[in-house]
Length: 275
Image (cartoon, rainbow, N blue to C red; front, side, top):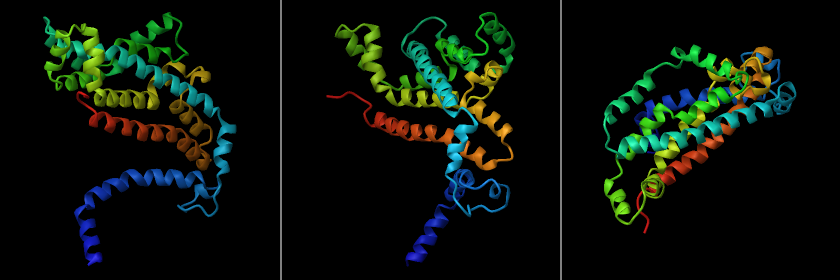
């Protein structure tokens, strides 16, 4: 009975199991290769014959990993903060205020979502070059102060689901529009804020094109994505060290994701008015 029940469960969830394996197996391969010797990593053996945790220590001697971590944390952290500071008021205005050309402005935001960044990259690069900011991460951090089209769209769509009666009641009690947004609406929008912050943080942490374009000539400002690519180029034969560096650079994001996921679920359960 137990065997039949187990086979029935596998048959019912066969597609989900196959998809899960497609995502999990590459991580298992990276993990196992990171503990292999240099000689075994070049063979077809998938399980380490001997475990070499010293590979992770050697990675720190081969490349300035901590500097890459610091640069990525600076980039992703400031980009997330700047994006929230600029996108939240824009999304609030598009969802709560009635003004002329509001729909046209919202369509312009959507148009910015489908516009490839490479279209405007040349004039934007010349602008940052004239400001003497090339070679640093500021050209990829500062644009977040002007808002992010996807973040504005996501936040605006969620704010539309919050009943207007909450804001009207706060205005009748004498709250200013700023207090209505910060004290009433935004606490209810914690799920959207958490999700949007996660999207922009992970996008910034994994960004390769921006740091490559602006900091490729200055290794002191390389991020983990650019540093990992250069590490792979320099140590492409030593796949055990490459996988160890990959695992180290993935680990903080994975840990942060689980903490952010918990905050996201908590925000969903706490959405509403507390007595």
